[in-house]
Image (cartoon, rainbow, N blue to C red; front, top):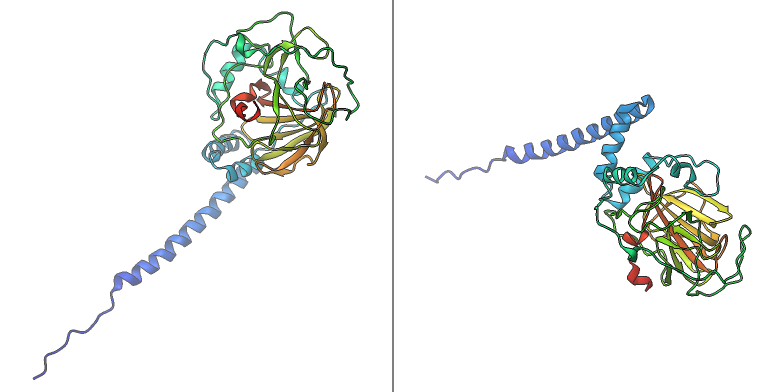
Length: 310
């Protein structure tokens, strides 16, 4: 009598796993749609609930550069009021003294403050007052990078205070959780952030940015993902473009010979946004980079590798 062979039976666990997998995807999809609808509802209603939700959302995604762009879109840059500089509307209300600016920077998730004593090395004296300049209309007399190419709008001061910055600026280090793209492929630093002798008018003043001499027409690249919040021309900055990167951080590129982007444009890190020039208050062809957090000027050397422009 032949032996009965065991019959193969289908395992119900595999079918259950397949069904449970589709069910999980369906639940996740529905959850995403519900979350999006809730966010849109909060935004339509407004108030403190949406503000808290937006801040939490920004903090959780700023570590990813692609999502940082979406964060900048969700958090539109503040309106820019008229004035000589793009940051004039916020400089007067933010950081009326040094202590307020340092406390404000500590609350941002993308920055960390350290109470280190700054010495005279923070200052960078330049003696290029003999160079003749014109302010207002763009000039293109300088076509090559020079060691004395400086400029920009300085904060006037009555006397030097090496340990403290004037209102509207701070020596507190600025730390961003993403590596900045090089704004210029090559160049040479001609004037650093801090106290200096004004290269145009003479006398003590405070330089709010970093000057990098480069050839006229050299491409200027955006340091981070962001949204163009201001494009214009002023007597001091000449042709400039300012990009908003979220959480109150803005980067200004000034003295450009040409601006290649429009306001509200979404910019990728490394995208060419302008070209080097000598417009505005300038002694030669160079790029003025200015980094602000909530209207307070910070030293750009904390995000730009100065070794690339030695």
